Length: 537
Image (cartoon, rainbow, N blue to C red; front, side, top):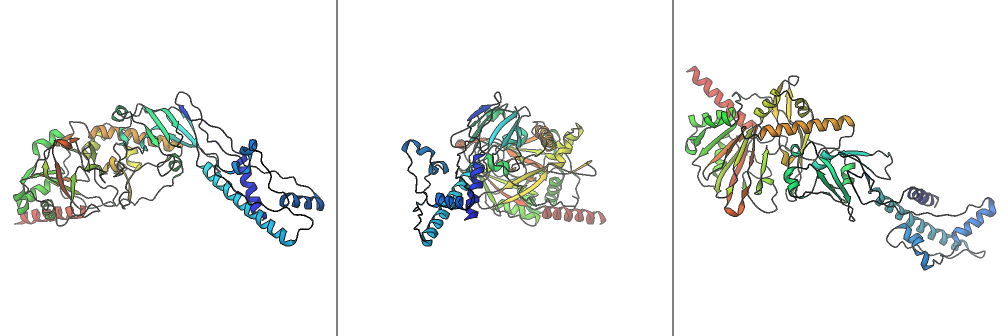
């Protein structure tokens, strides 16, 4: 009994410490707080001293009949104070001088049940209140959030850019695939909070000054729900989930890499007939070497067959099967599990960076493409990295040190991985790998110090610069795939994307497959040995 009473008393004191206040909206021009209202529950019993006092206290606690509560005071009753739902406590019979031990035992048990009911209600109320947060704009680009029952009482500081990047609304994150529809690097550095409004359902709505232009044009509002993984309470308290370590392949490609922009690639782009490639002779060897040198090759005259793309891929020895299957279709469809299966613009990216070993070569065979728009775009990530290094960008180091989280968490599959944009070696003098895939980027973890926030801003500034270089029209190669064409490209180097197309104007159907890094390297080494043997004869 003592434990139950003391638990109830502690919970009651905790509730008494809360401040009932309420504010529903504020903006960057009026930096007020949002506080959650808190119900107060309190009990008061006098404490008589001595033996007589103990008896009097016992009679007062156990002998007091259930009080009559006037209707005018109903709102002050314990039942109303404990929670918004009705809290029913068991009535008990008052003890008298003629009461027996059985009467006392019955009263004590009734009191203990009531104490447990009250304690449970207080804990439930406290838990509910603990999910309520106060919000304050420290500046027009920094928000402080805090909850009243946080024992360490440490506020969380969230920057405008970080929160904009976490926006879970359907305009920013596809409900069916979970893929982001924008890149972190698209967020303007001048982004500021405009208005922050807490709605009656508990959700938080944020509008922005200097939002991503295409989002601003669509009157974008970031909506963080009241509960669930994308709620502000979960974002502020989430723990870092494990990401698998990145495995680095130390095997050197036996073909020297040729970096390119559109002016360099266009004159030398190799287009090889399907029959010549499949024959496995000089055309195949030249095409494989070009794929290693520039990362981009086209085949023509490919049969209109759903197995043709697999036949091409098997010339490297094996296909890399993933959860999408051995081969897969790229067709616009509703509720797509991948952003590629829509008609929307698809920004430059690499596929499946959430895997420990992403595919090395990707093949896309065009079976139909009668839609207007839908041009395929490609950009050499290593060329863009070299341009950035030549500009002596101070952000290059941040892009090599800050690890970007990638994930796929839909349809029963769960993959996670972190990779820096640049894998730097030789004291930062050499760029060994470039990883870039905004559609599959997972939310960053909250920067918890001024140093981490400054680092995130530096990374964001560098990411914006890198994306601008990648998407420079002079650096991209664009081509609308025609039926009977198949494009092969290095997924770990040549970023790919697609212009928006009108799904109502025709049909667009591509068939795809992957080749693993080790199988591609095996093919290159086999060709290297072939050339060496030829030179010896």
